[in-house]
Image 1 (cartoon, rainbow, N blue to C red):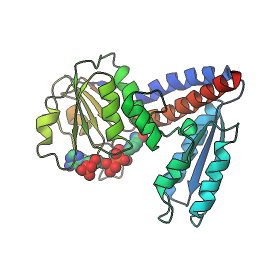
Image 2: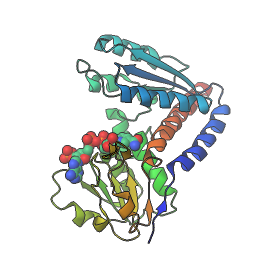
Image 3: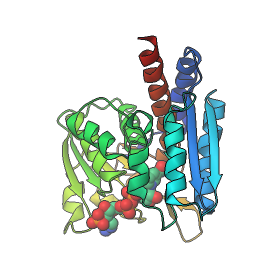
Image 4: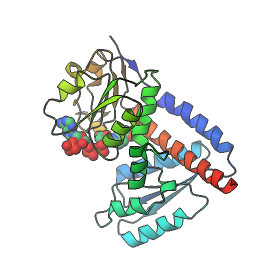
Length: 284
Ligand code: NAP
C-alpha cells in the first residue's frame, strides 16, 4: 500500500479563498494584531508569514515589534489597548517571550473574544466543556486535514503522541468531540508502539524525528505529522519516518506542506470568526 498524501497547501488554498470571500461580506475587514518581542529569528519568520497570509486574504493586520527589553507592564498595557481597538479582532503574541515576561499573564490579558491562538485558560475551558469558542490553530488544522480524507472519526481509535497545552491536549479533546476513542501518549508511556499499532489515526506532536516508524503503524491508518525538526542535511522533517510509513499507512501528511500551512490558515479562520462575532454584536 502507498498512502495518499493529505495536501495541507491545497486545503489551505481552498479554506483561505473561502475565508477571503466571507471577510469581504463583513462591514469591516477582519483585523489581526501580531506582537513580537525580541529578535528570535524563527519567530520573526513565523510572524512575517502570518502577516503576509492576512494581506493575501484581504485582512487588516498590524505587526508590533518590540525590543527584548520591553517590560511586562508595557506589554500588558499594549494588549489592553488592543482589546478595546474596534479595528482589531484577533491578538497574537508570538511565543517564546523573553524570560522576564510571564507568558501566562500575557495570555490571560488577551480578551477571550480576541484570543485567536486559543491558548487562554478560558478558551481551553470552552474546548473542554464543548462550548463554542476559538480553538488552538494547530490541532484544529489537524482536524480539518483528517476531515479532508472523508473518514468519519466516530468509533475510530485515535492515538495522540504528545500532551502539550498547545497541541497534544487540545488535539485529544477535539478528537474526543468528534467521537473518536482517544489515547494520549507521552514521554512516560512505556510501549508507544503497542498503542500506535492499534490506531486508526495517529497524530504525532513530539518534536523528535523518527518517533513513528513503519513497524508502529496499522495498515491503512491516517497519519498526521505535526513535528518540525531538522534532519542530518538540515532539511525540515516531521516526527514520522515518512518514506517508510507511507508504505503502510492509508493517508499521511507531508512535512513540509501538511500541518504547517494549516496552522496559519486556522489563525485566519479564527480571526474571521472573531470579526463575524464582533459584527453580529454591533448589529444587535
Ligand atoms: P512540546 O511542548 O515539547 O511537547 C512535546 C510532547 O512530546 C510532550 O508532551 C512530551 O512528553 C512528548 N514526548 C517527548 N518525547 C516523547 C517520546 N519519546 N515518546 C512519546 N512522547 C514524547 O512540543 P509541542 O509544542 O507540542 O510541539 C511538538 C512538535 O510539533 C514540535 O516539533 C513543534 O515544533 C511542532 N509544532 C508544529 C506546528 C506546526 O504548525 N507545524 C505547530 C506547533 C508545534 P512529556 O509531556 O512527558 O514531556
